[in-house]
Image (cartoon, rainbow, N blue to C red; front, side):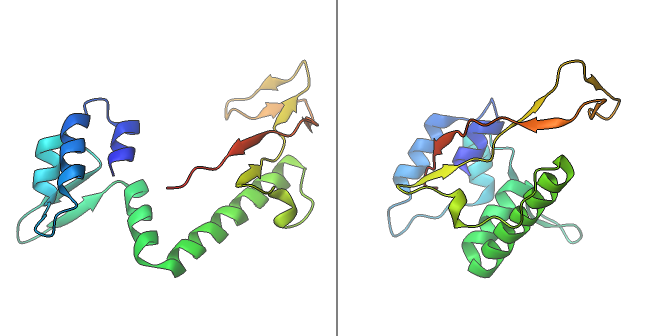
Length: 150
């Protein structure tokens, strides 16, 4: 949650986050949502008490990460769904050559990204942000990026 807050919350108190993270190794450590929000100015998660509409609520990014931590089956479903959506996107762009396979991945923890589409000169962008009057071409350069552990 700390990483999400640092990326999405400019008022996140990083110093208090570090203090909480250092305390978390002890056996008696307990962290409530209320304490987390009060000490770190977090906005990604909150709790609401009461008889109706009570509970702990989180941003969808945090919810997905939490659910994938609890259930490996859910995490694999999420990965498959992401891959399906990326394949669908490639079909729409006209650069689909079947489902992705392990040949798209390089060794040593690096992932080969699909090439970025380049727009031909003279294309105009429509109201929905879609280019009209141009064919999408993919550049031949392939970029490699380091995959960091979470």
